[in-house]
Length: 264
Image 1: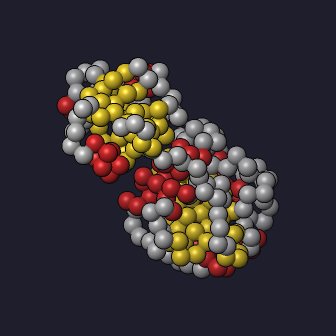
Image 2: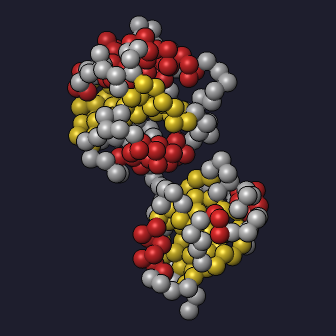
Image 3: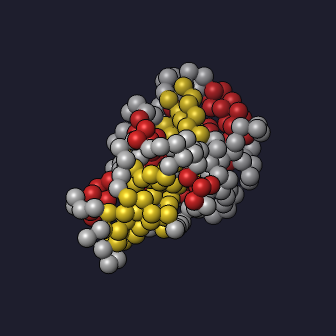
């Protein structure tokens, strides 16, 4: 029996029985595994938010970690349960795009549609696959069961349509793809795209009616309640307010544009 790490990411919150039920199932199958929560506070049914958080967290865990993620608005429907084995990690959950961003950074060695009921609980609810299907599969995987034992290999899976930034008339046009707990507005413009576009020229950043000039190196460089732009820890351009809340101050939402414009 292996002592392996299993992480959990869901939109279940911590008020109800959902998360501890999953943990109980896992520990009954492999009491020696290590369980670690990434988060259970993803906005309900928000697959994109879950994908973003997972993609920014998974690679900091030791090689061999099993990432169990369940944000599953289509539970009980036609979407397939899936298991990915990459060079360094395993991912278990619904095939609805939740792993799409993580898999952009990983080479998939094997993807398996999970169908072998031998590794499920004896009764599978149509509304709680996290407990009855995904948790036991992750637990058996942590004990050394090989991926191909869980079902047949597949060669296609669901992608997410995250839009890429575009260049229009000396403007780099991106959008807000995530708003964190501090209210920071995180865009889809990564550090490489930003600096390849500005190439050392002066620029301003527009969010709604707010204009921000240049970048700060960190939150510490801003004055209290000052709106500023910087490259955050995930490598993306973000808009922040020191000791404040950028989303509330700018009345911004996911999908709103963030525009980088050259000053010539």
